[in-house]
Length: 104
Image (cartoon, rainbow, N blue to C red; front, side, top):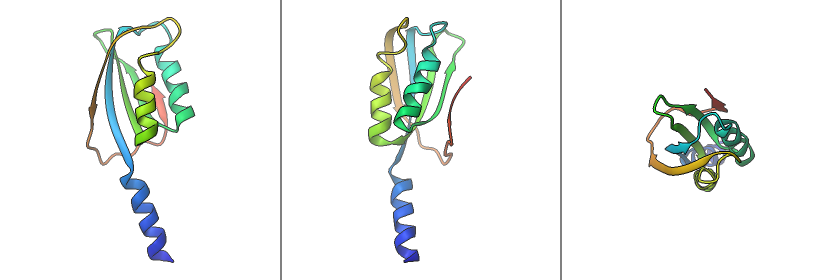
């Protein structure tokens, strides 16, 4: 029984993916991060959305491959008043596991 539980836990940890995205366009001052957090919470994705000095937004998304892919696709939609010009993504190798989705 203990071995089975350990295998289940190992499989669930191995299924977690982490991606970073940089979103450009009119994405600051239009509640883009708040809407991103709302969508991430709905999908069960952890990580963060932060404004960058160059006017873009950086999103780190961690969760199941399906949930993260859904969030990354949603980033093209953004908030009602945003205008997304590009979403550049890359997968991230990390030992850090996020517990929540935050905005900064």
